[in-house]
Image (cartoon, rainbow, N blue to C red; front, side, top):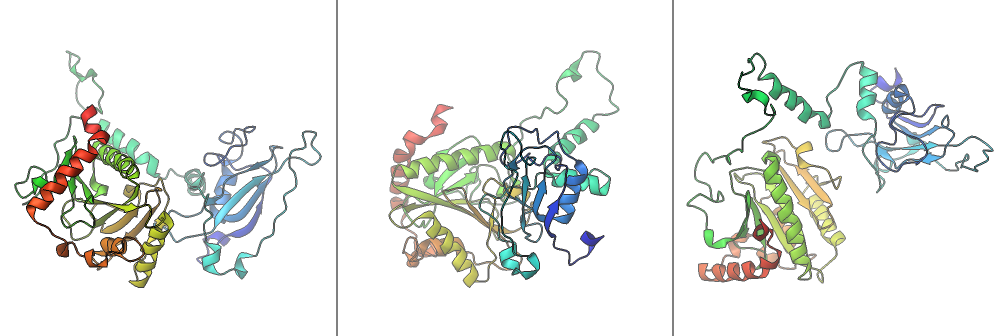
Length: 399
């Protein structure tokens, strides 16, 4: 088959009478056609295999233009062009629905690779990648959203073979879990809250699963860290309840800094570190706009030959990085995220260097935290001030 040839990139146009099944699972909806029920799974499979740049269909007699979708899994497959699906109504229909579509297209064989794979700003995930794979392969292929279900049934299978108690004690849900104790470090840790090594005078807020602390040698007086109370090495390894509180802290800090005329930048370096540290650095609105921060990270990454890729705004780092994998990622106040998979070496101060540069905070002398340390008395004073300022936003007081 053509699509099995290694050099095959896709086709420019695909014309089919039936719609592909579930084409409207993501993106906009026509409001007239149930895109999850109509259409053909075989056409979905064909679209997944052929990767058309434009796919036209007409059998449902309705006009529908879907948001473009990508043909690759971000950071797991090589970037490919996006597909646009357009359905047209029947010619001369009395409702005057659109049945003509004018467009110009440069054949992909004449386009530069970088231009071909450029993603539109409104691109979505592939709406029928999973059904397409199933139809093409003739068997069920696990998808990311099915992993939890597989784990659920695995938990049930662990209890197979047990007899039901005559007292009915097995009537409680089989997947109910006991609260887990936070994991413990293998040795001394500077950031586990129960550890004697923690500099507790820097702690400014404590939640159920996480806490906030001023950064030692911070880029500013209100540079803080979000840290799990238990011993977790990275965001990827966090349990669901810890992730939920991390997100709560992130949203609260955004509101806090916004009230003070600042936007915050968050980054994590899971490399040569043993305990997760989410660095949260406020940047005055007067310094620059978010695009300037994004450009500064990308530019300095290119200068140091670091492949810093933009990932979908609502994507989960756990979908991209495996536990134990080294990585660096940045999250901007708009929700935009930049990610680098560390394969060998990585500059430990990269995140600070970018934010301290002339383009952002213009304090290059503070790029290394060891050059920014102050006395314990000064640190205690800064911590007291932050606690007082943060108190109106403290969600832990509501619990």
